[in-house]
Length: 257
Image 1 (spheres, helix red, strand yellow):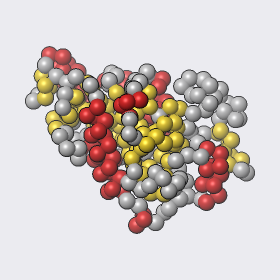
Image 2 (cartoon, rainbow, N blue to C red):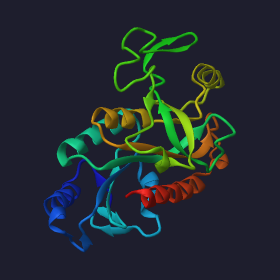
Image 3 (cartoon, helix red, strand yellow):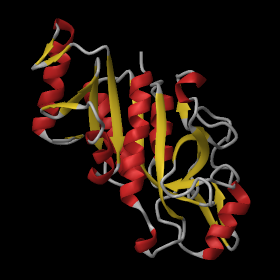
Image 4 (cartoon, rainbow, N blue to C red):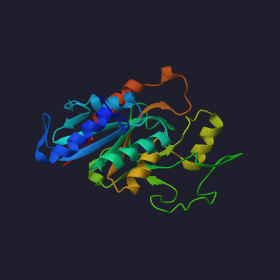
């Protein structure tokens, strides 16, 4: 079972956890040292968590080593992610760390299909004003200050609250977040020229924005399933992306204190 922000059974299980974890019992799971919130857009992507070697399930929750792991499936896109994540935080409190996982499209040959990256920075690419030469973003249009927290030069950090050692060995990638999959060659060329992103997702910036504002330690972990603009899904490799996503997530779990 996977926790959704709506759903009586899942909410009841979380409440039981909150009421009992500090007394030393959660069913058959002993009190956990950390509570990890793993956020994904789809059931397919949350499958990476469920396939980790050593993960144990208890009702709607999971445990790994000494840690309680709570999965949250938001649905795709920034609006669903923002609403479901904020609802979850409002109703059930703050996790020790939140990790956003999922697949991504790559703008470059590297990171190659199957590669897993930690997002270094993210931005809302299609929030602004449409023009003949692409989107004039909200900062360029004078609608927002690019240095207003949590933005820095119009970008959002892809992780926060952990040491560099925690992500040591992972490739860092600059991302953009869109509410539609980019397919047109002209749009791809314009985005590459303006932002030079490595990957594209439909949820990342919303996740990072909320975690930064709420002062929650967070990280975004993405695995490349396809090249941006490639609509022939026979050239995608989602199973490999999910497999490597699980392996990378396990590495991060093992590094938690």
